[in-house]
Image (cartoon, rainbow, N blue to C red; front, side, top):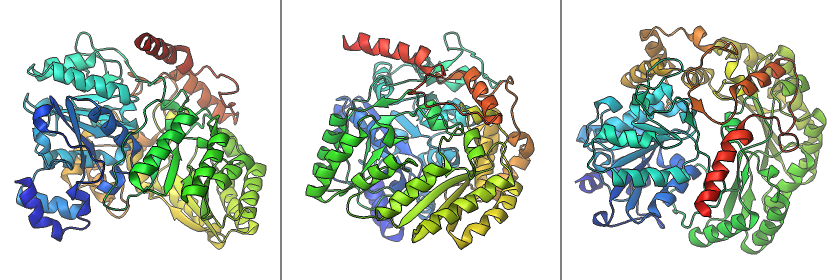
Length: 596
């Protein structure tokens, strides 16, 4: 029925390739030969979700299991969503066009907070009850994963369970548990899941701050799951029918970061650093090039230039590039000579644009955020890049950082002037509002409101003489900040915004602040109270989630930030954050036991 209805409407929607499936290298199995049907929902459109490496990894992991079939699900665009509602067409899987409500398990990727209303729309389209407490034994088990689960509370009531941490190993274990517990009551199956390290079952906890267990056996703190070594290579890469947001082969070369930028959530929740062997990386790249036909490779990590074998990898990839005419890209390049030399080696023949992230306009403020980059590093890197033939440069900055002054803002203008004087054809400033994130030193900091942004914007517009300026919407940042540090009561606001029609909130042209403002007002939310600074000793809604980094360490780092003191890269001097002292030791011991 679903396939028949699709034939009737696909010629009337934008980009029908989003929905047809049948791509080269997709996985199709006989439903009668598997014991668990899984849907992996990325709550954004196809071209965004297919660019996500995490989705590809979990898809590969689960389909490697003989008894499991995992299929992809993406959010339909607005035109398709409206047509599906008009025709009562349920949300379906890409591979087999199976109704999502007929699956055993629905896994949802939560990459950022502005996806929350999309998840609600997806469940509604799938005809699955929005709240976990309203589901019966015949509904799919709905589980979340991704970085947002380190503060699960604002969205917790939607999910039967939530995975905190790395997903490769635990995805297999969850699948096996759900196979073994088939036929049991939903509550009993969730009890089994709650005993697994890295699994949080919200219904087993109250709504206090932080939540406390209601069910015997539920852990007081949920410990983040950590993969001890990165050994997984994607055997097959799906070749999409349309251009993706990041239309290339993405290969993870390292997970975690040692630099300790105090605003960066990923830098803390993905500790410790784990590198993939350079031989494994190169093997994965060559296999991916062979089975896809792509001509661009992205080396992904939080700081790819910090991989200990990056120089040798760059040299080998240069040889491949010379033979196969491919280009290799890395994320925002380190602001030093080595970073630019690396970009020269891996960039291929096309010298288009480099991206740097100074983050702040003065050395004083860069010390506050622990961005250990000097003015000399900045000038030297840009000069080397321009001399090497790069003609465009993009510079990322944040405004509203703790202790920021007008002088710091004027420093951004000065840096754009320097970049232009060095001789780039195009200098682009990408300016975002600082958002305090859980499990970072700045989780205690104040978030500035839109009125501060307007003040800062007037100063930064002086840079228009030297650069193109892209400003992030401050009202989007405001909502993201409220959701980021919210508690379980925050969900009422999310639910009301959804009921008012909020959807695709991360798309600037579709974000509707009026809907969120009305939802905040309906729930009596004091925006200033939500954006305020937190004291170092007050309970936080995410204190029951143990990422491995000690809260006392985060508090100490925040105090150092206010004093303008920096913290060295922990590769060179351990800062005793807690991860390597406890969590990693336990993980490595378990890994040794499993492999011996």
